Length: 125
Image 1 (tube, rainbow, N blue to C red):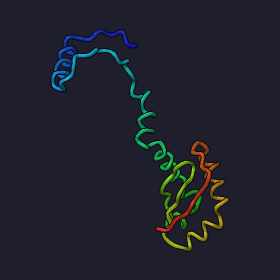
Image 2: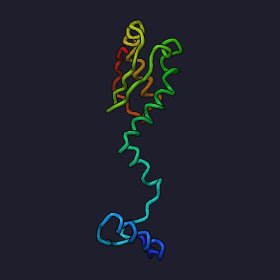
Image 3: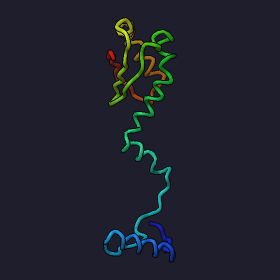
Image 4: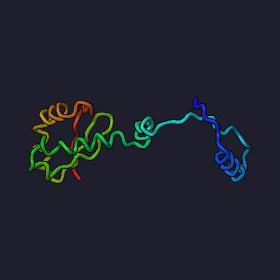
């Protein structure tokens, strides 16, 4: 708990907000002071951004893993529960990637061990 005492300005602000909301005047300083850095991971997880950060890491490594030609025809789309879904523009890219799926998965796991990628799925569209 924080041992700070409320200032006169804080009391005025609290009273104005309580009157505006139409609620009883409650305790003014009942919550501990928190740092934004402590809350960042929780906020990102609630907003669904934790996986998004991993997807951005995967996007950054994707060209190196599949090569320039396949990179132009594919894009990692979603990453949920350890499964990476890759969007393909051409059926030929699907065939080529299915042939190399094991190697691609292994390279992804080596390059991004923190992402914990379990599987790669390919979809047209």
